[in-house]
Length: 128
Image (tube, rainbow, N blue to C red; front, side, top):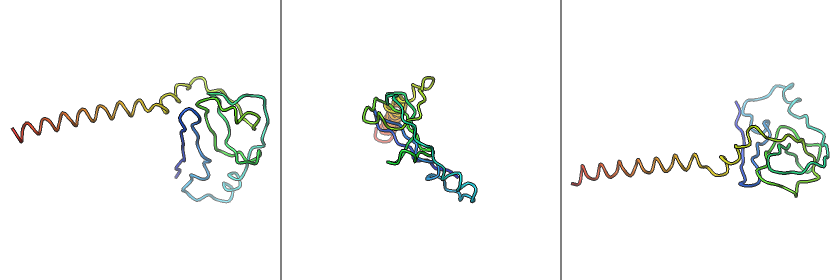
C-alpha cells in the first residue's frame, strides 16, 4: 500500500519524502483533499543544527506536507528558512548507525568469513 522514498546524506540529513508520492494504493476524493493540504511556513531564529527535525518544503515556504528530515550535521545554509523544530534526544543514536553502516559491515564481514571457511572446507574435501 505504501512505499517510501528515504535518503541519507552522511553528515547532513536523513530525509523521508512525502507520503503521497510513495502511496501505491489509489486515494478516494476525501483522501486526495487531505493529501493536498500544506503547512504554512513559520520563520524562526532556531538554528539548523544536528538533531533537529525539520519539515521538507519546495521553494514556496507554505508548501510543507508530509516530507521531513533529521539533520545529521549542522546546516547553517538552511538558517532563516521555515522550520518546525523538534530536537531529537531519545533516538539520537540513530544517525550514527545509519551513517556508518556498522551493523551492515559487521554482517558482511561475518558472512564473508563464513563463506571463506566453507570454500576452504570443500576445497580440502574435494581436492585433497
